[in-house]
Image (cartoon, rainbow, N blue to C red):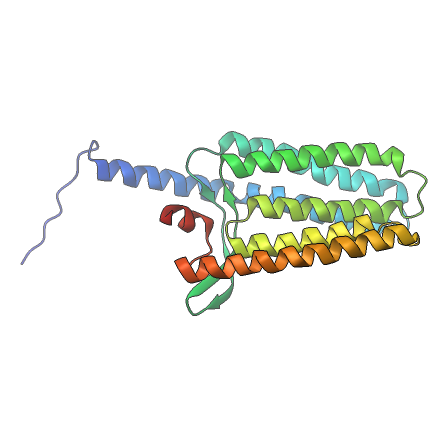
Length: 231
């Protein structure tokens, strides 16, 4: 038999759905680099300032503040372009296993972009205030580098597109929190507080990981968009 494809009217719901899907895909491709820059800016500037810390101590704070402010500005743009349809940044497949494909990707929607603005805005204020508060501290540079790691970890949590990636960044938040709480490690009280926080978080991590395994067993996926479609 000969199959004939007849053109559809522009008012056909199926054409309208396909057009909307294509627009979402184009928007995601266009702005995916912007999303990755929002996430990576604090980490890149923090790592760069670490190498300058011994020779140019005074520039350490400036580098880290610049990284967070850049994320804030890009986050404002990202919030402006995000709509009702989530925009998915390019995902990297890092652990494909039978029954589960773990990826590194970002999901941009109104909620995630808003939370990214909250994280970067608060972090900017904290860093600017800390330039004076920590000015005479001998570990001035280490403080700002650790704070940038914390901001990067928080942004990873709010922008991640799957539960396993959220768990990884949650662990990074735990590491940076441990380093900040025990920043003055020469003081016994600070060291004890850091150890207590570390052990308490490990209990929470067990429950978090157990919940992830239950979700995977029940749904077969950890992707947030796919989970939202199922529920």
